[in-house]
Amino acid sequence: MKIGIDIRRMTEFGVGTYIRNVVRTLGRLDHEATYFLIGPPGKVTEIGPLPENFRPVPTHQPERSAKGYWEFRTTVELLRCDLVHIPNLFSVPRLLPCPYVMTVHDMLEHLARARQQTGFWGAWHFQWTKRVLRGGARIFAVSNFTKTEIEKLFGIPQGRIEVIYNAIDERFLHGHASAADRQIIAQRYQVTYPFLLYAGRISPHKNVGRMIEAFSALKAALEKDRAYPDLKLIIIGDDLSGNPDLRRTVVRSGVQNDVRFLGFVPIEVLRIFYDEAKIFVFPSLYEGFGLPPLEAMAHGTPVVTSNVSSLPEVVGNAAVLVHPENVFELMRALHRVLMDQALRERMKERSYRQVTRFSWEKSVRRMMEVYREVGRAQGRMELSQPPAAKNGKTTGVA
Image (cartoon, rainbow, N blue to C red):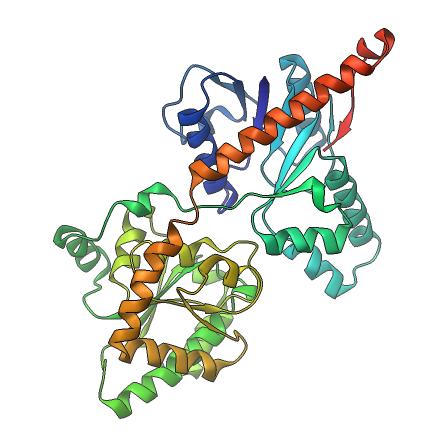
């Protein structure tokens, strides 16, 4: 088979991690099919060494432009691809000359639009997305929760949606932090104290404001217990400059000396923070999958997270689940996990077991099976067509 993979969003948070891990794993598992990595030349180098059956195909036009859409379609046609994998949901269709499969990470954008009851453009975007999804030979949902959301919002038949889980980057599996690792965060970030950790985007649905309020209440409770007087909350993610409300929340909650925003940190450093954190806190209101809790669990770090969306599915019985809109429930969960050493040990063992449920190898092997199923179905369809039809082009919408 000749399979095209759209890598144009590989530098984006989340989607980029997904593309890199899928392609790297395909490179280890499949030396027979030919894979065309379609996107700007510089992005291919981020994946690392690949076998000879993986070929970069450069594109130069901006993805979200008319020229970009037609450049992609023409490239797929010239390469005579049997199948294209689009690794993210997008709003404007492309007319492709072959079948496509598509990965859907979440439905947050459409849920937000539905709540805002947007007019013409919201309705247009929704209908085109429905057409894109219905045109796909198969849809990959990253969780059962996301699969249910796709069915509910767009009426896609269950049999067309395949649940293929995400997994953590293998760099989070390199064992516990060493003394030299701890020295890195002590010298580079001046972190020499016990801390709770949040890592992820800073956006409204991530619920970071309530987490800060819960941390403030936790500090008051710990003061009464005379425990953890120097405990901090470290927030790793977006630049705080785009979220001034959070700074106001910190000041209003009286924890400006105990909350630190570190912005982006590389994976090699993030794994040290995961390993050293007393608790990983992730009170998100909505996740299509939710990788950060799983990344923390790979280090045996206790996780307190939300009891909504996909998060219970991902963390299983290895985390403490709370209602994310209840600040005091979150505070009580943090207090309990900090103070109960027996609970921490149970969570640690369960975390290691839970992480093994998800692996890129297992997920990508299933993707390869779907690629072959779609390829065989396309071959049977072409054989059943009269000669005149075979000489033409099959058109799908993506």
